[in-house]
Image (spheres, rainbow, N blue to C red):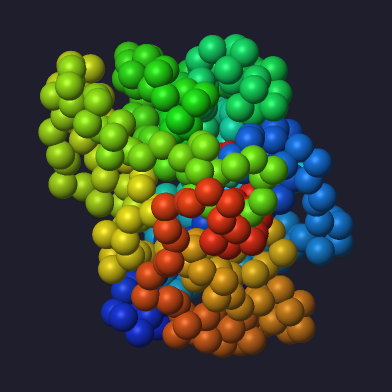
Length: 339
Ligand code: SAM
Ligand code: SF4
């Protein structure tokens, strides 16, 4: 048994940053192929390379024992992982003991109707749903899948189940720039916050990234022309900044990963579905946790590997605004590291 207790050393890196937030990817597979995230013909990992559900539970629990308070399950599409609800129900014991504040996930929403009630029953209180357009054809082009209807239905089901929903929207110069105000209004009217995300140069996707890149500074300037935006003090430890939109009453976030202004308060690390721990989304520094998990039934080796990783957490990423023809800053796709 792996009891969560508070007598183990917290995760503090050499810059004094406390890591209390872990994102874990459950699979690299997905039922969509968003143009900024994947290429059309992705090769996925052989299933044998993935951490088993038991290993995922052990891994998450090891982090909880080390003081991690927030767990986010992601992917690929986390709801595509067979047995995902067993994992969620298992991890919810840490919510019951109070060791964990928050167990949540990021999903494309396609299968949300199926899972919403189960997630709510397991103690999940809020989820992030990615949605880049409310127009069927635009959605289908961006996601390479004609499933807008399922996603909207999934979001309704989640709200009905009592889950708080935050919408994540990747801002794309050609595909959805003009639609962003309508998306924000739609979300706020439905009681959902919305966060805009700048595209990040992660992995080859078979398209020119500098064509897709839309600076959120310019989006914000444009929105300010007709809305009054008031900065909110809250910080998530990540690259998001929030404003209140007076006209809609809702909260709007801006995730600008290409700026460096959040690294000094970075509180998070990410684990891939094969158990590789990445200390920074924009750096290659990584430590394998799968081998220590598999080599011993107690967590000594695992804890040692986590400590090693923490000591190597980079001070900051080195993304740059994409220039035409540039190689991706990091070769791995977002669907590998987990968004
Ligand atoms: N499949 C789930 C989803 O789409 O919500 C979870 C995984 S997805 C990789 C997590 C988030 O990363 C999504 O909101 C997606 O829009 C975002 N994302 C993927 N690739 C990105 C990129 N290159 N730049 C910025 N955001 C990206
Ligand atoms: Fe799949 Fe999410 Fe990537 Fe879209 S962003 S391809 S839904 S993993």
